Image (cartoon, rainbow, N blue to C red):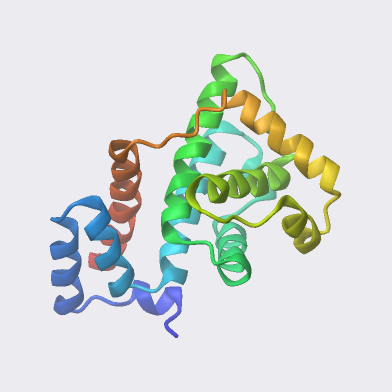
Length: 191
């Protein structure tokens, strides 16, 4: 299995050509090709990087509690324990952006450095519930992370209220997030 650092060192022309080809197709087709070219672990690293940038730009002290490495490990753990996909990572990025915008618009600051871990877990749970036909139950996540189920349920309900229960991701929003994350990866590979 390739590691993220090995992926970052992949600068051969064949890989770059495949990435260029994937970049020039529709978002859904490009995602399939993108996943074939690079490992899911390294792709999740770039999703983690995007999440990190969003968090640090909205929470001044977030960089003291979270890092790109810790977010990458979190996403990789979710990938191995509940099969979190790259698509779900991209949706989570869009949900996080919307959540921060909505709480700001409403004059609220629900997410802070003290509850950041819980909010990230809720973000993933809501993402999986919107993306999957048969998502894991909250009790499963509570057991995995050692969290009291009522607290997790309450946090999820608060997240949904802030989001005004608006969880539809249009293809254009998904494509935009995909392109931003893809551009980070593409720039890293060719540099």
